[in-house]
Length: 170
Image (cartoon, rainbow, N blue to C red; front, top):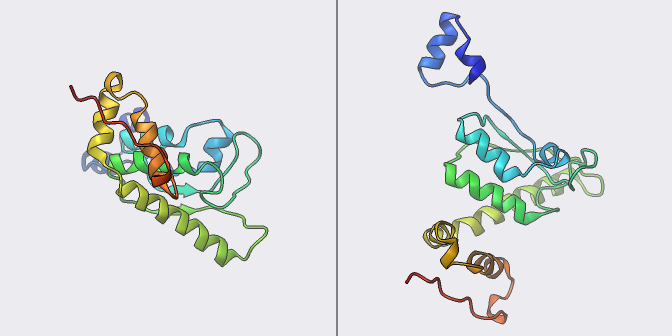
């Protein structure tokens, strides 16, 4: 934004006046994690400033070299947190996949990666967003509730878990 404020070319100024961004980001999850960044925060920051042009998805342990593992293989909860942040910002763009499958056919790796994103989005869309927002706005009256709720949402058999306590709305 600071760079764009310095532009003087009439064509660039016209595009900026129409609300277009001339500088935008295409962050890759693996590169963020190599730099010890939190993808939900990083994507959120880019969206806050209207600078997210595209997304690049894969999996990666913290630090290390760029492994380009299939989407959702490592830290699926971080992937879901990132997708949730993107949903809250109203992201409607593309989901690029940047993987390097070594132990399976490329078409299988792509299908698995797309399925991981679809499954995570399905879980996110099924969440009780009003309760989540209330809990995050009232941490003093919802201690542990959100964590318990998300554990149950991700559980294969949530009926085997203890009951989730109610939110203290009093």
